[in-house]
Image (cartoon, rainbow, N blue to C red; front, side, top):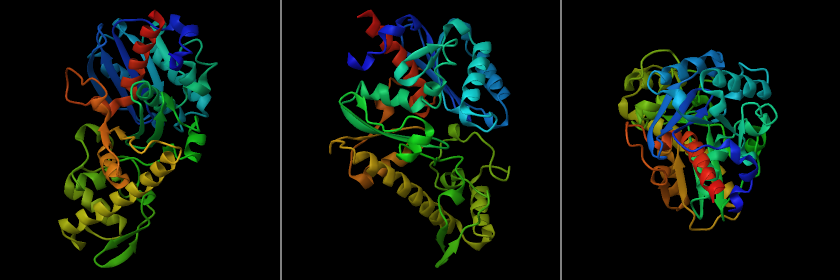
Length: 364
């Protein structure tokens, strides 16, 4: 039971019963609803552009409040949204997000995930803001480490990717803050929706030539994956780069602008091939980070465990690395209602499952 050594000192923070796990991102709100028996009922993801102001948290939670009776649940929350540029610094971001959440949810039943410190109350959150900030990866990886013998968690989201090896019940991370995790390739700032194409490639092959790409926000990776027909509609929630529609031709047109040309410069196969090349270069970046994590001594039989809306890329990574692929949905219980898989909102599910596990540990 060593993995829950921090549980006992904070056992009073954990309650049993119906619960909601929350993940407050900079672009999305994710929530996982569990019933009184601890059964996962539904997961939801809503757009939440926090960089435009913290009031978007109020709007997103307000939308869920129309569907779920929030006062009836215990609430376990993790976040990454404190880093958006609407806040002066991360401490202010954590503080404001906690205050806003506490005003909308029953504050006495709201607990913040503080990584190795476990769950802390709203009042304690100021003291533990460094541990609360951007700890959603820690929730998912810690839950997996307590369940699987070893593996490499690769959680690819709309904006960022978390790559974390674990073995023998421990997450083998070297960083904790975003800054230190970026330094160790445990956090890679690339995702399948919001990442600009210019951040992934500088040259592309087209019509037999190597062409430079425009350093302009003409297209995002969402355009790439729409053309390749990989992107789930439920994860494609934000405006396009030009504010126009999300159809295949419109996505191809935006890719054409990256080359300083128009859609009629190629046919659909040309634009498909271009999108496939850009996808491969994004996989290159992720593959290098995976190699670095594997070099920490991960066993040769350790699988890649895919999470996030971009986990379709993890299957390709596993093939490149000659490793087994496991979908984190096979580790989670599947939601009993609704079409969205739990894997799309892995930290929200994991933070509630950690609270359940803590309840069991405290009762033993």
